[in-house]
Length: 398
Image (cartoon, rainbow, N blue to C red; front, side, top):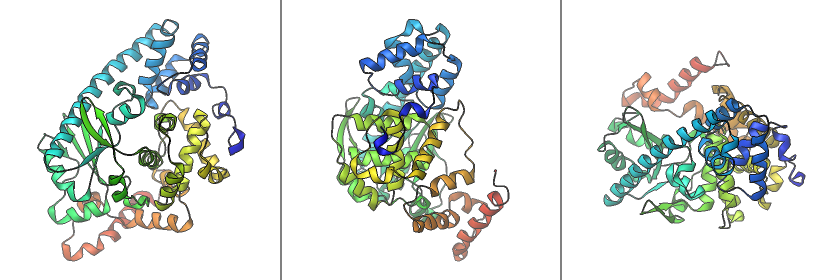
């Protein structure tokens, strides 16, 4: 594993047996040697309270339960196994409800001439793991074209959902241009739909190739419904962008990419790397590939290998991996997130653009805190910069 500049993956967690157990379970299928190592770990002295906390914090409780139950359930302490099974059944029931909501929404969109693509949630669980129940479900993420955002929003609201932001008609064009997602909630916040028309905030600087994305869609069956899905190459890029945007908070996000790279269908890495360059996110993608390589021993594709030798990127990958070992999510302060994102920019120009857009790209929060007449709307970016300075500019630990 050293030929790409990465130490042996065991060194990333330095003999942490609880974390190693989690890594071995973070996949759809165990090899014979993987199952044997799993039995060895379970037979040893493990802190099961920490195992459960790590699994929940990293979004891997369903996979952990599945493999332990299948491989060595009788060797697991009864209380731990009972906890995992209980969570597995609750997650499975929620996944069924979410999937039913998803397929119903997609049919509604289709009947109204709106093309929509789920790119996370239950559809990804089925695509990557072949089983809805093996991914910890939270909400539904659906991508539509920019021109369909408001019609799709009306159809979601008609199903009893409430939008997170109430956008006045005068601000709708600005909202679509400056943002990339609108959140809807129902059932006292238990059911959430994220309606996307992009993959990251404008300030993030990723140039989303919407036209190409829609042309490369593939089909998949989900609970008897034929749905559109991103191509493997587009899905891989999207998952890397999502992980980097949220500072790789969960190990499952890395495991999902690893599962995609293990799939029988060959990925066109030359095409992926070219698109990453066009999207201005090669360093961002390289970090994802380093994490997959270091944690799951999957080879880094040839086009990305030169960049993956970067000592700064490797250091950042190790920081992320160390955070996975924490039983609680680390506090992501404003400045820590900014620093993390800036280190992933492909060049200084992109770093500068990121900072400028972060400072001046207005959001519904800015519009609500300082409502301005249309004649003074030009001042909104200035107000945002002032608001951010007041909130974060004095105490960098906020």
